[in-house]
Length: 154
Image (cartoon, rainbow, N blue to C red; front, side, top):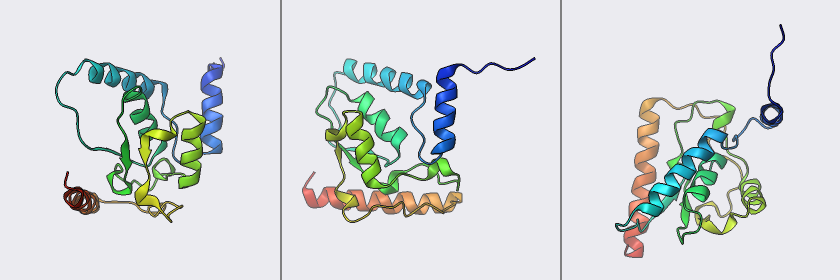
């Protein structure tokens, strides 16, 4: 007996096989972003003064969907990425490709790319991290963020 794969999944699988780096947000992820958006819209307390986002497509898309219709602008930071496993899904696209993708989704205005001036390719493309490596990278990223915010007076 053969197996059946719905056509929308077949298209997605073919796209992922063609471009396995920096995969798109899944349907489950889109649903979770909409749930987060509902939670944020119901939130009546103070809003964050700083939003940070990983430079991976799925993270950028999650931010866009979660904060759609708000004035939130995320600062995209290389160092706030998830654990680098060495798999192609952890390799981000070139910055120009990410920006083109966001423009095609109508979401290019909600991100600040100042950290990426002059940086096109993924510096972590061939990196596989151990737990200590993640800790060191995260600390370095947070130290830089806190230093930048202190300099801005925020």
